[in-house]
Image 1 (cartoon, helix red, strand yellow):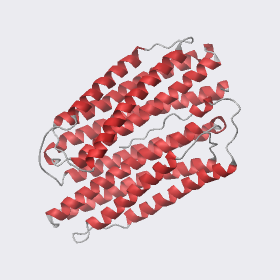
Image 2 (cartoon, helix red, strand yellow):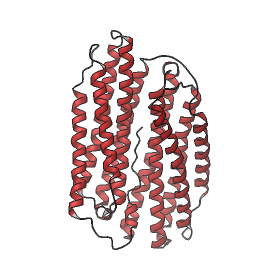
Image 3 (spheres, one colour):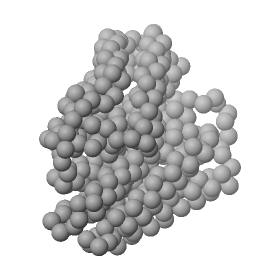
Length: 390
């Protein structure tokens, strides 16, 4: 879930000197795409607000809303996939990103309201109707969470590809802060939504994806240990951070592969859960905080060494640092989505409900900690780039 985390915003500053501004028509096209996404999100928000579930009309409106939410996720993904460097970001585009991000907590709040309404119908609705409503509600919750992730990832790509970030540094930092706040608000609503749904179901057990998750935990812990062992200095930090960036990206590919497998399986099957995969998912989110701690150390080192480091080395080091933050942000999103997929696929939520909630709460806390570290790294990078005119 969610968890889109503001990451990698400045890599475009390291493009070769002499790259020209993007033509005005391309900027206008991007601004129009973002404005259209805002309109689509506003339409979904209106659609959710209009839903008032009843025992006789429960699943249809929820299914239609989820279809609209899924379409919006696809639209955001399409705009993101079609982006190409270099871009020149403008105030209108950033305003649309802010508005799109601000709509996500509203959608999450409507999802929360619907989960409360669904619970109120439980005593009177038929069991089969409630089951279908629960499935639709979980799918809607999953898509709203995925939406938050895709908005964050699209914003990162836009800003990473931009060639005029230095001129808009203050506005970019404000956008990051707004999006971080909205991600946390969305997480809180999604957690409460899932809590409400879990009170309506019952059954039991078995392992799923244990070997994959256990290997991810082990590989992540080893990566965190390697990152923590790095001691930066003015002469080798370029190579050191480049190596770390490569290691982080390699691990991200493993996380993405595991999540893609779950997505594929979710289209054709359900699973039974016991505490082992849930503990592994919790351990994965805890591992994220270890990566964030290492990033905090790099931030402190870069800040203390910036005055005695050559511009060439510092520029390359910041590029690697921002790529690391981008990949850690993606990693956090995919780990949250794996947790959501396990919940959506599970046939036995009831008897593992307490453990599921504990895992969700741990993941939300750990992702919030990771977000704070990523935002701190980005703000330092922006400050150094502006001060040194890199």
